[in-house]
Structures are given as C-alpha cells and as structure tokens.
Length: 558
Image: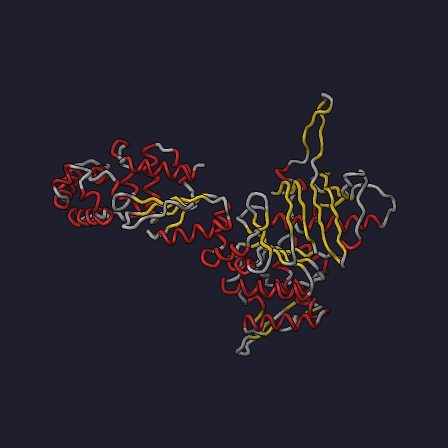
C-alpha cells in the first residue's frame, strides 16, 4: 500500500502531502483537488512503469527523461500536456548574475509505501516537452545529487483508477484490455461494462460467483453470463428478474449500472490499490453506505487499498468511524479527531463540518427572513458587514438557544478555530454570556419590530405607478393603519405597542386587508419583508440594529 503521497505543481495542487491508510476517503467541495489527487497517484504509477521499462533497456545510472505521451496518461485525459500543470505554468523567468533565464517548472510526485514487509520511497519529476508529451525522471537524492535507488517492491503495487459512471451504451464490441483501460481513462465507462463482465466470466469464475451474489443481494435480480458473438464482434448481457423475465442490461437503472461497474472493475483487474472518483454519483442515498461497506470488506479481504473521492454524506459518516478522512479544504489534511467528528456527523452531517472548516465563522438566526432583513439594514446603513452577509455559514434554529449551542459546540470540537454568533427574537430567558458562542437577543419582540413603521408600508404602496387610482390605494392603506394601530403608537415610534406586538403578524394582516379592499392580489409574504427594510431611511433605523450589525461584523469580519 501507499502510506503517503507528495504532490507539487499538478493541476489544482501546489505543494501537498497526504498521509494514507488502507481505506481513505477524500472529502471536500467541488474543484477542491480531490480528483486531482487521485489522478496524481495514477500518474505516479505510470511514471514508475515507464521508468522501469526503460531501465531494462539500459544499465547506465542516469536521469535521462523517459517520454510519456499525453494519450498514455489514461487517468488524466487532457487536450494538451500543458493542462497537467498548475495554472498552466510550465516555465518561469529567473535572474542569474544579472541575466534573465528561463527555468522549467516540474511536476513532482513522490510516494512512500509498505509492500511485502518492506518500506520504500519513490518519486518522479515530470517536465513539459510539448503539447503532446512530457518527460519523466526519477528524483535526485538531496544529499548526493544522484538519482535515487529504484525500490523493486513498489512495482508490485498495481493501481486502478475508475472515474464516475457515464451511462451504458446500447451496444458493446469486444475490446482488448488496453482499449478497455483507455476508454475508462477517457471517462467512457459506458462502453466497457459488458467487456469487464466477460473478462471475469472467462478468467475468474470464483469472482463471477461473488459478483452475481452481490447484485442478487442488492437488486434481487440474477446476472446472466455475458455472451460474445464472434460473427458481429458484439457482447450481449441479460439479467433475470424475480418474475423469471430476462431483460437486456441496458434496461436496468443508472444505480444498477454504477454498482455493477464498481464491482466488475474491482474483480476484473489485478489492482492492489483502487482509486474511485465519485463512485456513489448515481446511487440513491439508502445504498451509498451499503456499497461503501461492501467495497471496504472486499478490499480488506484482498489485502488491498481503497481511496475514494466523494460528496456522499452517508459514505463520509460511515468512514468517520473506522477509516481515514482527508479534508480538501486549504491544504488537504487528515481529520484527526474522528471521535468528535463522529459526534458532529451523527446529527449534523459532514457537509456542516466542511462548511465550518471552510468558513470558520457561523451565524445562528431565527430564520431566513432575519438574514434578508439584516442584509437590507446593512445596505441602508452602508455597514461593512454587508459583504459578509452575502454568503455566510448560517444556521436557522427557530429561537432555540439550546439547538444553536449543541450545533456550535459539536463543530467547535472538530474545528477549534470556529467563531460564532447567535441572535434570537426576544426571549424570557437568560442567555449564556460566558461561552465561546456570542449570544444576543433583540430587546423588541422580533427583527420586524425594527422596521420603521408605518412609514415603510406607505412607501411600499406609493411605489410607481403614481396614478389617480394609485392615490386612492394609498388612502386605503392609511385608513387600515389608523384602524389597527393605537393612536398613541402612531404618535410615538418607541411606544410599547411597537415593541411588544408580533410585527410580522401585523404586517401580514395589514396587507391582507389592503388586498381585499382594493380588490387586487397583493400578498407581501414574510420572505419579502426585507423589501420593506430597503425602504428605510438611515436616520429611522434604531441604534440597536447598528449595535447588532457591529457585533456580527466583529465575529464574521475578523
């Protein structure tokens, strides 16, 4: 197995070191480098094979580069070899003794491993030759400057890389093993599934039995052996349903095809290290955990290594208890405190953990309306917190401080640098003022009580078009407000009525009455109350709103 991989200047990865174990899960958002790391491992193996093959032709101990054609890099299909380099930078300018020189930027991929009871280390550098090819050289020993020794044990490791499933072709011709690998590398898995099954049926009858048992247990159908028709060069394959009806493989669902591809690829090859990119992409949630456990069980039995890149929360939750998880956030790193991670995953899921690692700041609010109104107030006041409210890590807890605390402190145990703030509606309880979660509440009933009322309602109605009938509508709204609001409150914006009334209910009632009287549908739902906030004037907004925005900025903006 490979115990460590070091990668430099490859695709999305700059200088990266990843510790590995027998079962590893790469987790992270899209474009974070998970697939790039799998591809780097595959490129390392290709370099090793090419170097070993070239070594047989010459006994000279030299670092002459072995040429690799981009089309031979099956795991990384690119239109130009330049696409392998981070930011497409293959050369850089340097100054030596005042003179400008050009220096090649090399990709470096080094692996450490343990095979047949022996530890080994082997690394290669890859140099850009042209759009179609690259040079591969074994790394030098930093002390002697000589090429490092080639450990024979490393050659016993065989790596298989399987990209996401791409469907299933209606027809499939028989292919040679090299063609199968080439199509898989290009992501054309739709064209090889029957070939993989045929290979297992012809060469590994015991594995065929195991494969059919897995499919029968998962889908309650029986795989029929694939049939090769020499006259046409085509392979056909059927499966038998529990009714006894035989169907062509193309009739099965995408999840069925995905699972069959996974296990047929595993059984057809002789790989000691299996790299799977999004193997759960087409699986329903209920099967993802089951498939991962099945894969892990087979890998363990075969004494092999499994490395998976995934988004599946089910897979991540399962892996957290027993396997290595590498988080691709910033520099890829192992999630060390898995016991605490399991605690946070059990209730909140791995996606929450990833957000916490990525954002490092979280805000707890009653609901999405609160966030929208806070953003609107920040816009009116030109408050610097506005940018931080555009895409925050926000959790809605419907005024339950205990839920906010449970969520925050579970994540805090896994992400010690996490900072958080919670703002609740007015509650008749004491908040915790000593914890790491900043807890605040509004002195008025809820955030809607800080809308400058009734001014923003009349402004909303006064918005264009300003015609004769529209003027009559404004009069209708003023009448409704005068009917519903106590006279003393109309004279004083700080009257207790504005403080204690549940203002969201009041606004809903006002617009419902207005709509009925003008005989026009005009329902301003709670999700749009931020539009009223946007009609505020800076001088109308209470100081407490600015204080809350300041407190949020102190947490989110630092």
